[in-house]
Length: 219
Image (cartoon, rainbow, N blue to C red; front, side, top):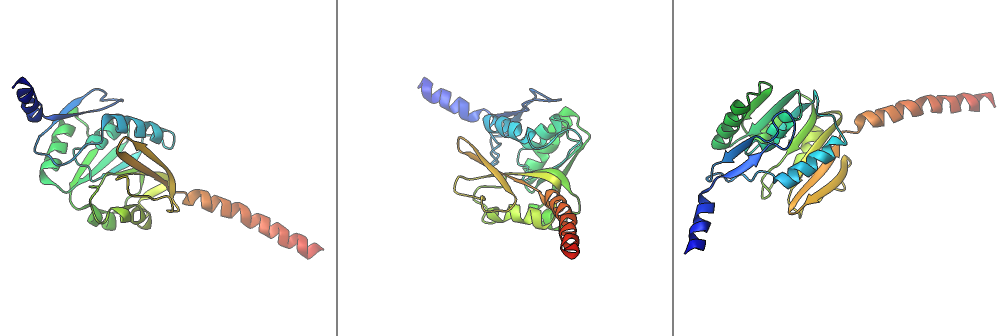
């Protein structure tokens, strides 16, 4: 039947991802049908980047894309003016696809590391302004990732971690948690490195405590 033929044609078509805005706005990339990776939907990507824009400045930001998959987030970060983007992806085919996409746009400020995300987190010595992580929803270690990022000190002061996860995960009790956003079936938890703010408050309180001690001594 015609409907059956249409369905088969649609199944044969490659999925397409696009860059929402910025330097490479509108560029499209066909994702091979064989890929298991599910790129973040355009709707969810556009909305979460709008939210991120309220927290960080993309210009000159050093960014890290964990579980980069198809490279959709890395490409968007590059398009929005990040100084450098590092993508971590373990799958050989996915990594090759990311490399092809970067070559198509001609970006020179991108580094692709094909390897295990958890091994990278343990050995990384860099600090980032933005970290985006989109692990497989069924990954057993998924709930530990935000804690690992902060334990290893991977974020600069006021740095942002955007974590995509399934609807059954909640991180509201994490001390670095800022807010949760959901777009359809896509869920994001946002975390911020507030250590700098805490240190400033502590530095402000110390002189006050000294003044109180002096006043008590004068009485």
